[in-house]
Amino acid sequence: MKKILSVILAGLCYCTNTYSQYFNQPSYNKNYYSWPVGAVKAIVANFGELRPNHYHMGLDCRTEQVENKPVLAAADGYIAKVKIEPWGFGRALYINHPNGHTTLYAHMNDFYPALEAYVKQQQYALKSWNVFLDIPPTLFPVKQGDQIGFSGNTGGSQGPHVHFEIRDTKTDKVLNPLSMGLPISDNTAPDILRLAVYNRSLSTYEQTPKIYPLKKVNGIYVPVAGNIKINTDKVSFAITGYDRYSGSTNQNGIYQAVLYDNNTPVCGFRMDSISYAETRYLNAHIDYRYRAAGGSYLQHLSRLPGNNGGIYKSDGKDGVIDLEAEKGHDIRIE
Image (cartoon, rainbow, N blue to C red; front, side, top):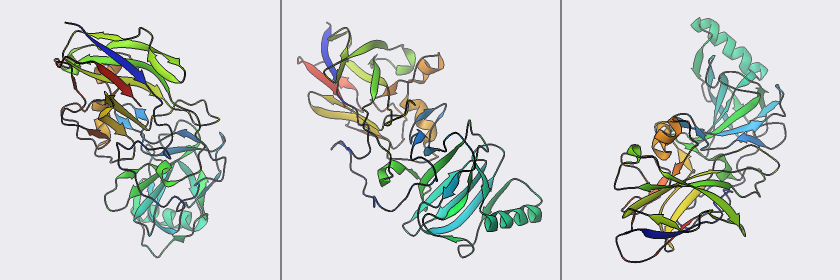
């Protein structure tokens, strides 16, 4: 017997100043950090953005398409580490702060003169250009706004920018910098391009989902086809969507999405923090089979078996909706 679902996709969360009550709200001092680049306050990529086999783990800060913009300490602290490598972060430094966080600044061209001289001395002593140095806490203290170097395009960079991260110093878990009150203007709601529906009597890896194009009606996305007819008793959903920051045309990642069944939240994800040990779980957050075949990113609104990544919150059924009961189901995603 076919089941009929009414599905609407309300405005997804597009700003880290707006929180769903489904998730616990992070509690941070919103005035602790300042912008880490002496350039326009804008980003190319945001935290949690989807990448091949991993999440993007910070902000890519614009440098107005040029190199050698001032890189600034985001808060008081001391330079704790320096990394130099031909790939990855290129030339990067880490600052430890009294609040228990570490900030990372990557793809730099040069460090400030005293630090640059120290690093060169260590390279000669170690007889290696590639280094990852632990620096004594008293050697290079910094104040918020101090210039710590110059932006560049080193390492695995695709163009001039500064990659900026905020980490928990003890656990090395990476935190969403936009939860800290950094001054990025975001008044544009995400675009939701398509909805995917899965028959969860089968593995998601053994099927191609039914894809429903969406249209926007009075600010709400609905399937072009109207109500959805389902030939199974168990379903789950995924979406393709992108966010844009004010004044930017870049397609960035969605901060959060929550699935509701008859006004009850059943599963959602939110990009508050991700550890490097968890980043490969991206391949269980997306429909990996669909993506590997050349399709777009579909972000699951269910927690797949074995996905222990921390971005999800769900009920006991992990976002799989049981349609056996003889009742209607109003499905909402916001």
